[in-house]
Amino acid sequence: MVNINSSVEEELKNFKEISYKLGSNKNLVQAAGGNTSIKLDDSMFIKASGTWLEDSLKKDIFVEVNLKSIQKKISNDVDDNFVEDIISNNDLRPSTETSFHALLKFKYVLHVHSTSIIANAVYVNSEKLLKQKLGKDIVFVPYIRPGVPLTNLMKSIIKSDTQIIILENHGLIVAGDSLERTYDLLIETHDKLDQVYNDSCPLYDIDDEVEVTDYIFKNTEKYRIFQTSDKKLLEIFSKSLYPDHVIFLGPGVPVFKSSDDANKFNSEMKKKEIKPPPFLIIEKYGLFESNSCIDAAREMMDCFIEILLRVQLDNEIKYFTQNQENELLNWDAEIYRQTIN
Image (tube, rainbow, N blue to C red; front, side):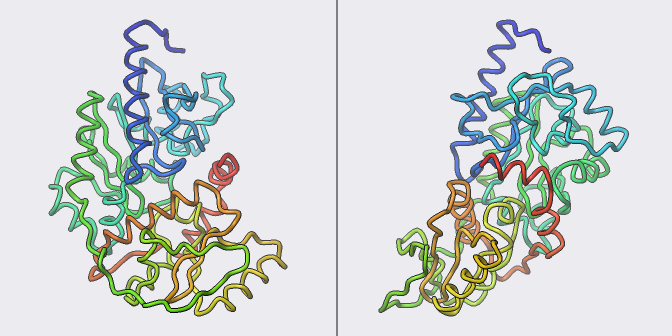
């Protein structure tokens, strides 16, 4: 365990403040997504699985783990949840992405699900476009399931001095030895790509009302994009683009031609004892939210909207396959994270 002297206390305090700033910016972190870490001697403090970065200053959300032990496991390609490496006594599990934090040799690692990064990392030609916009020093990592599989892929791609890593269909990692400079680099990278393209998409005129049992119609300006008549946008609604999209919204938001179709679908779900989706869409009318929707799903829907606003529809989009969706939905670590949320 790290000997907590005054200088280490100050480092941890500053680290938690930056973590809070990241977690409070919903264009960077949503719900339990994203994670941060600080390395101190042979230990690493990392956000716990299922916790929210915005709680960094008011809750105990960080786990101290044995850094050397985890790095040894990574070197030996051991797929592990690192529970045996926990030093803390707060009954929390380390983040599902602990391994890549340990892999990167820098003192600070900040990982976010930036809406501008994701919107630019979902194209078939994302790597080329991102290097044109951000420079060739960035490392682009093709999509693979988060956790140890991602870390093992990163091992074969990154260099010792790599500081900016873009994860295809996933997010952004920034690493450094100065907390302030690492944070600034993250914000700078996000801002360079932060451009809205679809805020004036064509919309249907609605002159009547529809109802879906146990759902609330989200008929406000914020959700107008789901009333679009743009066929390219309509296609995206029922697909999935990034891991937390699948975990909290399901494999795409179901789109129906009518409220009758939506009610029949939900009735069948209940008969099969399957929980209906947190959101659904009726063409022309827009978005409907389940009465049982949780806060994490609401934040993920807000994230989805921000990404939809920033996606360039002329680019070919790379959606998750059914196998990739199933891999996430059946992943034990994610089931644990959903349980907490």
